[in-house]
Amino acid sequence: MNGTQTLSRAIDILFALSEANGTLTVGEIAQKVNIPESTTYRFLQTLERSGIVERRGKSRIGLGLRIFDLARSLNEQVHRDLLTFALPIMEKLTDETGETSVLFVGSGNQAICIQRVKSSQLIQFSIENGRVLPLHLGASGKSILAFENDKRIESVMEMLPSAFERERLQKELNEIRLQGYSFTNGEVDSNVFAVAAPILDAHGMIIASLAICGPNFRCQAGQEAGFVRKVCDSAERLSRKLGNPEDDIVDISKFR
Image 1 (cartoon, rainbow, N blue to C red):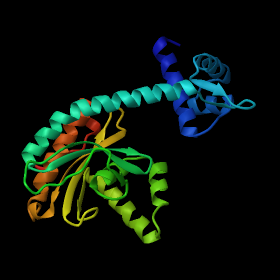
Image 2: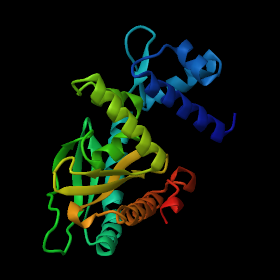
Image 3: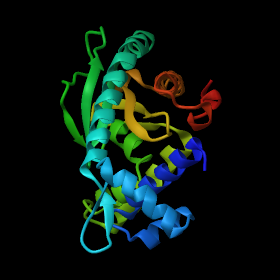
Image 4: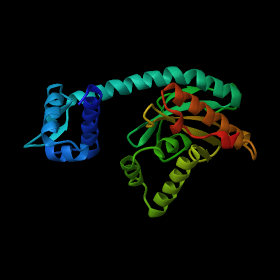
């Protein structure tokens, strides 16, 4: 087994443990990654010495604290890169649309504003950095939630009081995934419209949403398509800056 194959197997083991959301036996890991138990055991010994995995109880293996340190460092780096790359794109988006642009990230079942570029118009949407909204309300949160994993979506669904609301939200999330953007009018604020699109990282995972927000009298019939095109184009450029491949980017040609 060469170095590339060895690295690939080690990564497969880490993904197997991550997807298990708990612990696995050596035999279970071997079965999931399709390698002999003896080989799996040797990999686990190496990973354990590095603190990447750890033994928990009798014959149970879980992710170690070191992997969470690495994940936290990676997350901090992604957010630094995100803010660095996002600002000029947001400034251009606000200049082109005349509306405030906002960047949200998900945290648990909430969406948090981490950057905004204010409109220069006298009547404008105003939001402060650090503003928190539920993931299931508003274009920014929904464009994140639609691309989240099933566990996160189920967690948000449990917050809704009725089956009707859960079914309605699920239908909307399906539509957002299909079209690649979210449009809301008067949902969080009765006087505000918003168009948001997802930001995907190098692995096609959702990390943020980019949106424009403004007074709804400036988004009349025929104007929505232009706003959608500009937001999706900006979100695509930001995702590319973060290393996302073309195949994971929403095709915005239908909005042109």
